[in-house]
Length: 109
Image 1 (tube, rainbow, N blue to C red):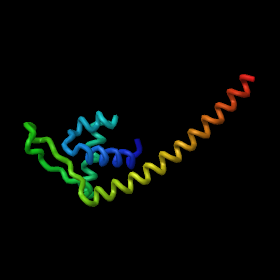
Image 2 (image 1 turned 180 degrees about the vertical axis):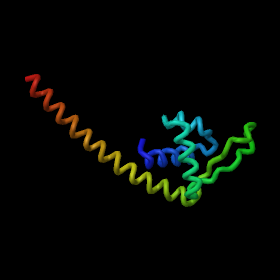
Image 3 (image 1 turned 60 degrees about the vertical axis):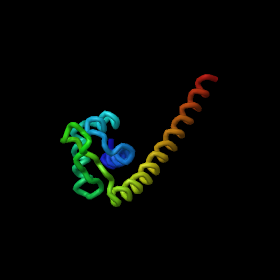
Image 4 (image 1 turned 180 degrees about the horizontal axis):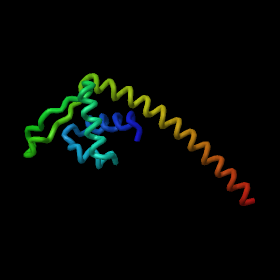
């Protein structure tokens, strides 16, 4: 997964569930725990999220990750770039599928 995709998916997941653990986030996104930890630290350093101790948790090491206004703006920009990239991938894949169908029709005749 590209770093920009990881940041997008992490910001998106945190917006929906800010009290998710790093391990749960790694499992949900299918990336390593180390990569999640690295990305979260980078997002905190960039001021895109704030990590606060989650007071209701029995585990006092657990954090609540809150998107800052800059984080919300960043997520919007990342969403747009992600969508443009995925649409281009879709169009390429659609053309490739059409070529394969034509090849199959040619061999089936």
